[in-house]
Amino acid sequence: MKWTEVQIKTTTEAEEMVTNIMYDLGVTGLAIEDPKDIIAFQQSEEDWDFIDPNLIKQDYEEVIIKGYFPESEDLIDKIELIRDNIEKNPPGNLNKSLGEVTITEVYEKDWAEAWKKYYKPIKIGEEIVIKPTWEDYEKTDGEIVIELDPGMAFGTGTHETTTMCIEALENYVKENDIVYDIGCGSGILSIVAVKLGAKKVIGVDLDELCTRVSKENIILNKVEDLIEIKQGNLLDVVHGKADIIVSNIIAEVIADMIDSLKDYLKRGGIFIASGIIIEKVDIVEKRLIENGFKVLDTKVMGEWVSIVSTIE
Image (cartoon, rainbow, N blue to C red; front, side, top):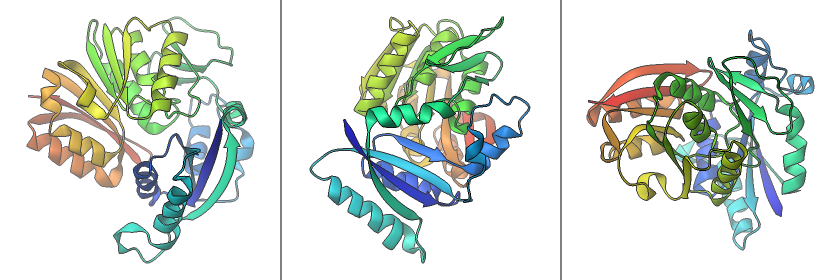
């Protein structure tokens, strides 16, 4: 299958605005490359050799955002809208461009193979190891190894937002919990929840590609009897109440979802929210408090924040 890669060279400050524009225009798959994250990872105590050293030598300081669009009748219109919103007339009456847009045609197989050399096993939290399916790894006592092939779906475990969600799931998932994973991407959080003891997980994503990739990864990890993946918009396709709801999306979507969250979360249940850029934390926390939630923990990693709350 042929895809169009839209590459945007932007800044950390404009990253969320650019990703919002891409999502609004129906992007299928999104990759973010931030040299600052790579350098920080390289300096960490647990260096898993996860990034090719050549990436450290990149001669730019900006963030690279790559969005992928399948062939469609309105593809040219979408590309023009992206150029218009990012290069020419950015939202908010900004006086400068949000970034530089480059268009390239790629084939799914070629894309998937090209980035695999950068993705190595990584340990997150106390127990979880995310292992690419094509890599060898020798498990040690107490580790839970998750097999993953994210393809073009978001969720490798290496992004701060996913990492913080996994760490929160480690802290809060109890045996026999029911978990909703809203915006499931590659299915990584759904799989982690089951491996930590949840008896039932429902993963939801609006993107057909993500639901397909999630199902493939669930089968890889032999947990298809415990996880159900649905295509739909946020909470619209789930029924009943969960013990834990985890959502790794963006601040604005999370804030909107909070208004109806009580209808889907048990009293005393846990809501794990990530994908929140630092500047938007107040928006999410305010909405939580207005809806009767108590914030239990707020964690910052890089430019991103996760919030754990409970319904009182």
